[in-house]
Amino acid sequence: MNAQRPPEASAPLLQMEGITKDFSGGRVLFGVDFSLHPGEVHALVGQNGAGKSTLMKVLAGVYPDYGGQVRLGGEPIDLRDPRDALEHGVAIIYQEFALVPEMTVAENIALGQEPGERGLVSHGQIRERAAAEIARLGLDLPVDVPVKQLGVAGQQLTEIVKAISRRARILVMDEPTARLSGTEREKLFETVRDLAAAGVGVVYISHFLEEIFEVADRVTVLRDGNVVAVEPTSALDLPRLAQLLVGRDMGTAAGREPTVQGATGVELRGLTVPGRAGPVDLDVRAGEIVGLAGLVGSGRTSLARAIVGMERSAAGSVAVGSWSGLPAHPGEAAERGILLLAEDRKRQGLVLQRTVSENVALTALRSSLTHRGFVRLRERARVVGELIERLRLV
Image (tube, rainbow, N blue to C red):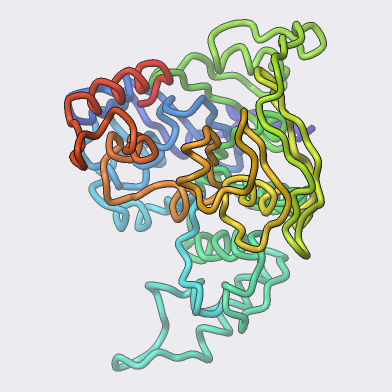
């Protein structure tokens, strides 16, 4: 567990007081207070839709139409765009990295602040400055390698160096370990601790609650746009934190009643993706949750893609009810009742230019939502509205 540094030992670096934010007439932040001290790692946790990202986007200058007051070093500031935030020393590393894949590590670190004269960029200075920043943080990054050739951990560290090179006093990390291995996570935790030791205030957002106890000094819990708790990490344990997140006692895994299972829902027989996965035989029963675990490269994703017809080289069979075979494409799999929630939501799961309603209904367009090739808009609105209410989508 991380050694706790008392936040009260120094004046707040950041104070967000009574922050409110509305979208389309609906309020998503209800007078949120949040503070951060120099050298503190402050975890911000909550379920999806609790308001974590919205609060941090206020701090990043993305949402200028907020209510309340933001203070840095005790002085009120007005955050009207991301450049305002950067100029005040606020840097945010989003879950989706803001890197140019074809550029080198050094070029990405220098983005927007390239050294040079008379309109000419000095690539030598870019490289020297990047190497100096990397060395100052005690990291191991190849400055001349395009970031697309790095793993996720290397890209994450590149983002950190880029943020710190702008002399950030506040660093917000949004789900930083979501795609990292165990070893890479430990390296990231070490880097976070080093930054805090140097006086940087770190806001750490994560759904992995065990990590909170590993790296954070304090925890703020958001639920439905409200602060429900602000506690030193040392005053909490995992069950208590989970209870604060959901608003009820979660109980323990050991005491949970086993799920009543029905007939076999899906059968996999000899399902193979040559060179990547299988052959796999697996029965999944109605009402059952089956976990597929394995290291990166073990074939989990390839197997899932094969089940829904996304791997053309796949062999074997998938059986649902009286049907057996291999879906030719995801549309056929959907018709058989098999759906994939893709690992890469942005490129494989959603049409980002379309509305929430249109995306929710995409897979069901051959059902009662259409008539003679036309979408029944009222019926779609009704069905989507019921789903949003049922799943508590914000």
